[in-house]
Length: 563
Image (cartoon, rainbow, N blue to C red; front, side):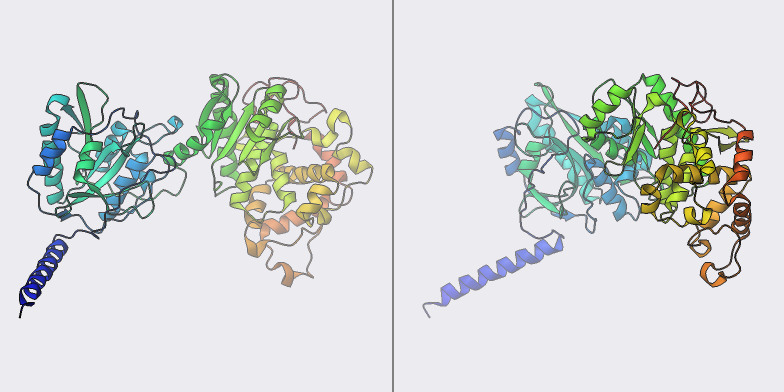
């Protein structure tokens, strides 16, 4: 009997614990474990770092004495881990997903109007603009906290934030990331309050598994005010009360957010302020000439070529953003290819680096190589199985080009008569060094690039040139791109003996074969015909048009793109 009081006391304690657990579940709080956020490897930054620590000891003591509120939690909000410097965008995207919007953090950034060239995510003004444009009532954003009355002002602001939570409205707040002196500032999504443990419940965008994290309310109130001035602090809060939400959708092409993220990676590579950056989708152009010249090249050559090539051939853009580096002369070209990429170029004109996803150009030699190399990422995206002879034939065709009837059109160039009028395709034809079309169009990539490369390039170029002049190239490319119409090689003449191998021959390919038959043998017809083309090349290029005939050349090599 002497143990009865102990048994009764133990039973009473169990009842109290169970009741408390049931009450905790009723208010919908998450797991009672407290997980303090830890600093990421590279903390997100949205403003100058704070220079002071938390609120006063009296404020914390007063806050601790404040009667606790009831617990509240906005549940089933998915977590999205932020992209670099997109903490605010990720917070907004999380709640938009809760509201059924199929959007992401890139969509939020795109509503802000922020210039991607700034190479950062949204600061508070841009994030507030984005939220309003999406259709949220954000309310007052910046709240001044006089240091003399900071305790009362912060408590009143917390009461307002808590009242919104009770009404089902979360908020994005900007706080210092943690209590380190030189910490960064960071956006978090506030979703609830646990009355039992006096903890703020929030989504942490900077870390994986960052959903429903917890932070002591006293710690939160210490991190919240941003201390830019000695006499008053600033607290930032953006309410996510839906008003008339615009229906968003995920983007299918590169957006401003994609370019902003790309610029964050690119910016440290740019050698200095002498370089101008222009976004020209799907490329980013970095040029060492004057801003006006770089912008003119981006618009007059790159955009023009992209628009015309897509009009003629390509339905699919490159899968990745590609940089185009335009170095102003040979010295800059060689110096900066080593400084930026660690490369020693083997050509004086330019090259494509798949490793660095970059077109690297000595633009002093003209724009021919530039347009040639622009073709290749589009072919890779639009026709991944494209054989080398067609890929390089198209690229080489537009080394020398202009606009005719609203379309891009290749012109004859140095590959026909040779550099300094020797070693060109015509000389190879006379010497009997040119293989048949069947051989050319059956080459593997290795054979094309490593076996008689110069002749292969020239032959492929002028086959494409002849087809374009006869109105067949565009139709052939689009038909040949379809797997069921793609032969293993292009025979010199139509063949009825291979219907099972090649399948049905479309009209465009059949006509091409007929034209190829005319052109087969030793290319005698092409020899007679090519000099009568619209802009014959007489050997070494003269000062005149850079591709597109849209600008004067900068030197006597302007018409001579080489790979």
